[in-house]
Image 1 (spheres, rainbow, N blue to C red):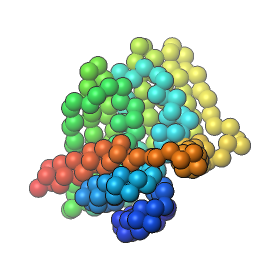
Image 2: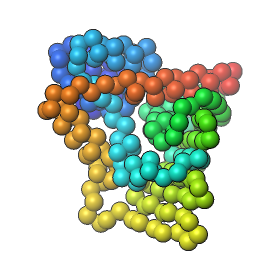
Image 3: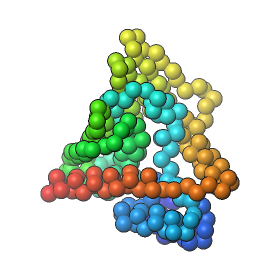
Image 4: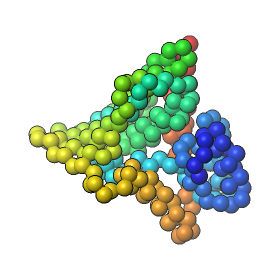
Length: 233
């Protein structure tokens, strides 16, 4: 289901109550309470519900899950687009939050948030997650002068860098570059095709898909929003 985020709660509720397995573009909802309600409704009705965190299945990012990850760095930036904090985080930064959670090699036991607000609008945010032996840092700057997305994972004296989901650079002494093939569809390169196909395959096979893990990403996003607002005040 693809619709404006503000319409998600009503539309997803109707689909779940009708027993329709539902794949919805992120986020489930702007408000955490609505996201919790939708996940619980899906579980009560025994209906599959999935959230479109396609980057988990993007080839470049999925390959990073097989790389040593003592340090994870991700930045996703835009040009001239400061926004109200909840919109900024739930419509865009949520991709960074979920990718860090996906790649974290262990349990997260510390969370730190830093944000810059100007006249009620969020300009940039920094999220740091850490656990036993690893640190994951995600940044988003909507006043960066560039639209870009860069992911780096490093460990055991090696580094893998993914630029704009299309170029993978492995560093161990000399860099080795792999670029997206000219005929690879953008939807496949970004993991969208795999996410949708995987959901449909699960539905056809009668497997129940849960959005409980996706809810954990929404909960962390809520923490980012509240911290940004607290720091602004």
